[in-house]
Image 1: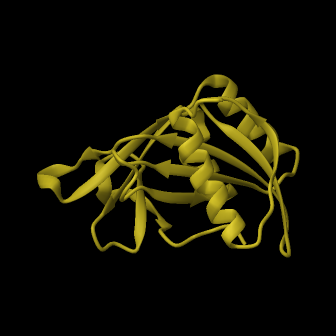
Image 2 (image 1 turned 90 degrees about the horizontal axis):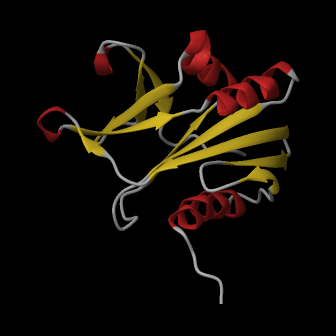
Length: 156
């Protein structure tokens, strides 16, 4: 019998969200650090780049949670390769919590990805305060200087 690893649960959660929205992905490439899926929807064809973090860090005075995602040079090359090849790229960042309860999904579109990882950046920090309707990705200077990603953005 095959054993599960932690990545299986996070990637499976994203796939479950897609299936529940009548989107049937095909795996393009994957390993324990990230996976890439090809999606076809009524709105067109997409590539979905998935990464996860298993646990958040508490923010100042516990007012929010944050997750830091680091990208290898190979990840960056692959991400911008998809964009330069004209693919409609989305990035799913699984913001995990211990025990999985309270884990969240942030979906970045092509413009968000370019803004966050352009100019040689190799990491991003995403945060969300309780009750906020958007994630924030710091662009330097903390949450005040951040782009907002809708917390209910889902493919489809």
